[in-house]
Image (cartoon, rainbow, N blue to C red):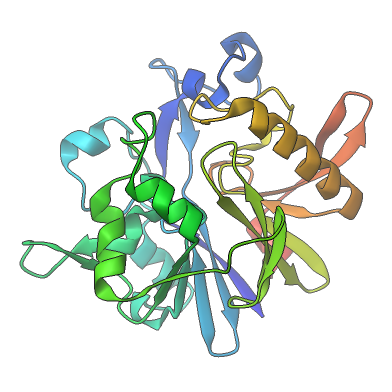
Length: 286
C-alpha cells in the first residue's frame, strides 16, 4: 500500500465560525487571522494505492462554482487536484473509488465537473465508484435550512444519475469495518449526520483522515468546536471519545483542513488530550 497527499486547493474561512464560542484572543494563538478575520484552510485529500485499486478520500471544492461563490472563500496558492495527481504520476481517470467523508461542498465539490459543452454536469472521475452512506445521503439531498448552503445539488445528484454511486453498509455502532474499501470507519454525527472518518492501516501505523471531526491542530481542546456543527454538544462527546482512543493507540491524524500541520499525534496531559508531535508528509509517507 502507498499513500499520497492530494492537495485540492487552499482557501480561507472566518476564524470565529471555525471556533464557535471560543474567543479570538485564544484561538488566534494557534490559527493566525488576517485583517478580515479569515484563517488559512487546506483541502488536503488522501489517495490510497492498494494493488489495482486507487481510492481518493474527499475531493475539495472543485472549480465549477461562480467567481462570486469563490469570492466568499478567498482561494490562495496554486494547488489543484489535477496538478497533485500529476505530481504523483496519476490521472483522474486512474481513480477507481472516491470516498466522501460527507457531502459539504468543500469535501465533494471536486467530484463533479462541467461537461464538455458546459451545459450540465458530469462525474470528474469517470471510472470511479463514489461512496457515501444512505443516512448521510438522505440528510444531504433533503437538507435542513442550516446546512442548505453547504449541500449543493450539483455536487451530489450527478453521482446518482451516472449510476456510479454506492453506499457502504449501515453501521451497527460508531465504528465498523468497510469491507467494500478495506479500511475502518468511525461515524460522527455532531458536525453533520453520519460523517465518516476513515482509519487506514499503513506500515504498522493507523492513519486517521480527520475530515471535520478535527479540522486543525488548533481544535484539539474539547470546547473548540466549529460554529458549522449542527450538534455541538454531540461533537464534544465524539471528540472526547475519539481523542482518547487516538492518544491511547498513537494514531496518526491526517488533517484535511490544517494548512500548516499535515499530520499530528496526540497525548494525554493534565489538561486533557493535547498535541504530541507534528509530521510532514515526507516524514511519514516516504
